Amino acid sequence: MDEQNNDAQTAALRAIDQSVPSVARMYDYYLGGKDNYQVDREASDQLSIAAPGTRALAVNNRRFLQRAVRVLAGEYGIRQFVDHGSGLPTQDNVHQIAQRIDPQSRVVYIDHDPIVLAHGRAILADNEQTTVVNADFRDTDAILGHSDVAKLIDLDQPVAALFLSVLHCIPDSDDPAALVRRVVDRMAPGSFVVISHLVSADPEVRVRLSDFMLGATQGNWGRVREAADVQGYFGDLELLSPGLVEVSTWRPDGTPGPTQETAEWIEFGGVARKL
Ligand SMILES: C[S@@+](CC[C@H](N)C(=O)[O-])C[C@H]1O[C@@H](n2cnc3c(N)ncnc32)[C@H](O)[C@@H]1O
Image 1 (cartoon, helix red, strand yellow):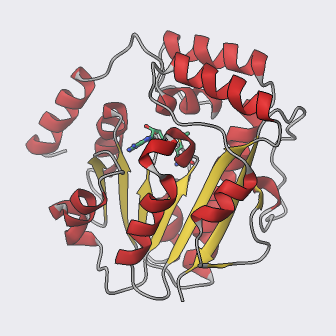
Image 2: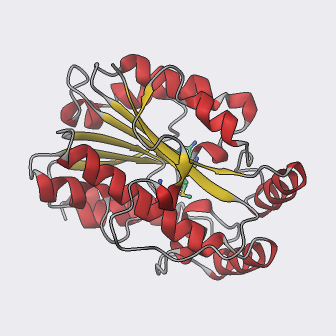
Image 3: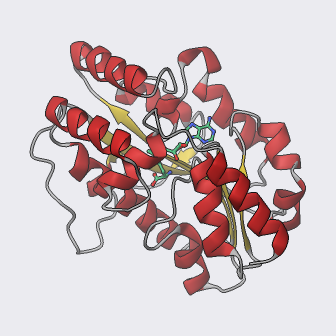
């Protein structure tokens, strides 16, 4: 790793608050990763009591992300990916899937959690086609204007903008639909948007689990929504078949994920194209 990356990693590690659970680290714990602390494990274990299906849901969401990237790179020729709220690196990250299909594929990971920068920089040190930006993805102009992003992403060519399991971290006051629209407006025709989101048809569950996450993360969260809200985030983009569905049923690849035995909340996802 070069000196600049080393300094950035040290600074990022110092900025990590180990006293409050973080969504990135709780998700890492659910996926079986090691980049989490006691506070994250305790919050996740409590969440699993309130919603026992959460671990299976997280694994199935990650597998949806992997299938969507494989389909976009393999079948639709996408070579540029901007991953909003990318989370901690795990196995088969976006760049590994896309660069297996074409080593020239370019990937920008964006996350506001310093732990993502610390671990992301370490694994990407030798990969010139990929970068991780420590930023709040709500600030579209700053992100798309960031020099590291501009170096890798040509907005005149098709891009896949990924919003996987992140828009429920955004409160209504920050208007997730407008946020997706701002990104779509900047992308060339032939680009894609991939979204997954926690949903429940039960208003009591939506409030209860949202309150749990708001409390656990000390306000660093949005809310559980209804499938119709998520449908709205795609605006007038063309949804690819099979549309917006429970993520494990989106173009299954023959290797089934874990069964979500309880379904307090479920993760809905879809992929849409800008014509
Ligand atoms: C549940 S994880 C999902 C990770 C990955 N997208 C996936 O689906 O496998 C949510 C991630 O979004 C990040 N995040 C939430 N709000 C964000 C924001 N406003 N800006 C940047 N990152 C954000 C969190 O730090 C966390 O890493």
